Length: 277
Image (cartoon, rainbow, N blue to C red; front, top):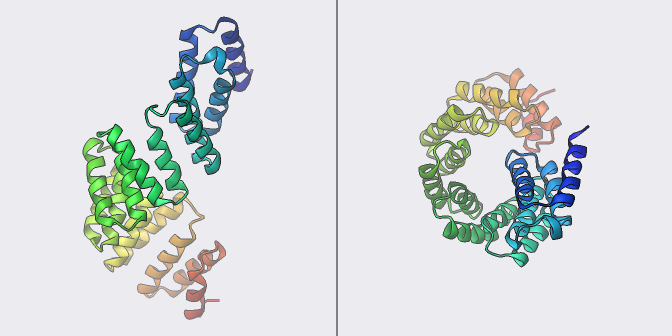
């Protein structure tokens, strides 16, 4: 019996017994599925809960939470308008449900609407003043709005509350790199990579090394990023620039060609400029 059939069977038993303990177990399982990154499965689980709300929901707050988490999962799948509809439904049912403003902020970040993301991140921080992820989201919103120093300050706070999340160091590193603080940025990428190998950290550290004219180190990092994801047209392009700086025309042309093949527009100019075939 597959997982879906097992889950439907569990719901059938709940419809018969619908005890509060069973209801809570199903809800907790759905939340755990979402937090573990299985977005599509969690959407299905929360939908079953919402569709059977008369029998299965302990309270309006729990029903609101179902809409909230379903909306959050949809955001990660790129269904941003559907996400906002679910978040609005959660707000209409119970606007005090914890993390609602946080997930509004996340969805608006995905929509590249920095102003709205910042607004909801501020509300999330007011509700959860020691929640590291809320500060991280506000940092990203500030970066979108070109408040680079504010980005660094918020990531400082996020790291104070949780020093184990590599994403915080990656974002702070990119902000420092934007301010041309390349050595400080490299230090942050080093910390991120000690926590977890990450494509963005390798690629961004490569950029910082190239800005310092340490092209051999930059090529090593770009190569690590490409080994993790071979579809990065921009990374092939930047590695090509580092090969070019070291006088390695053949390698540079190969990277510019691959970058152009992957749709990175700047690479076409380099192909022409360097007489690549």
